Length: 312
Image (cartoon, rainbow, N blue to C red; front, side, top):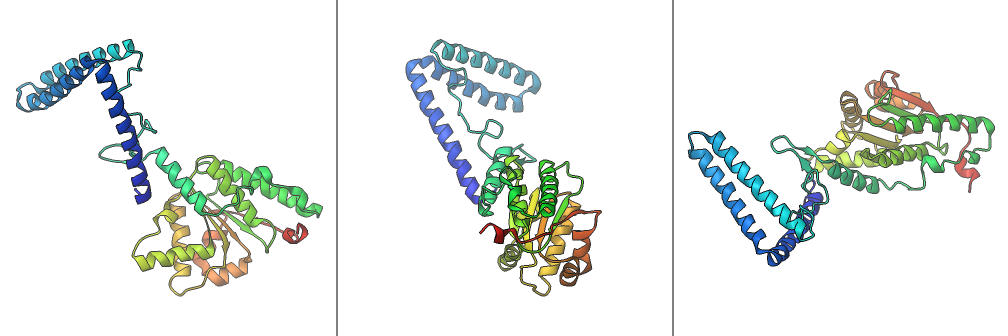
């Protein structure tokens, strides 16, 4: 678990348990019999462990102890209801009833709870510097004055929205590549996809090509990995081609990221100003095949005039 989340969950658990302790103390003051029941139950649980270890018939001893615990629980609930409390009044009220504010489910084999994944997604979404206004709901086709370009963008929006609505499991192809020159709306569409993924509680990370290689270099310096980039359900890479071309790093890591994510069945969205020839020249055959091949990727070519100039 990330350190920042570990501290957050520890704080949430402490708050819930401190509040439960205060409620128990007040309830014991109001009805001392509740305290006696709690002490007797603890004694039975302790004795159950001792008897199970020493008894020739541990199953029978355990069944007897469990029956006594159920009797005490029922007695406690009846008293609480008579006092006007809920039957779980003395128990901690965790924010997440599934993981009890631990962030994980299971004992021996643990997996992240949905509440933990949601926190992780919110953090990564916030760090992606996405413009909250750039969404499918706010997509305005009227900024495209040329009718042909407007029609193309209408189709592009529909395709991207269909892709986003299918994340993470029901997309026909796992990768989506948006191509075209500067100012045609590629970044806006990538942001729309990322925003829709977040709305649907799908964990998404959005980076520029430059920032992606920055993460790679940081991981090399620190001797760590880029597990989040490799494993996030949806990775959006904007402006691929703006990153520095570093020997034995850029091509190799971009191929590794694309290839491992494909093998894992994860979704990757890429936007670039590069042409087909540019991609092949810059990244060579292995990366080109992962980006362009119809087996792995749906390619969306945007055409027309720079709409950023027309809206200034």
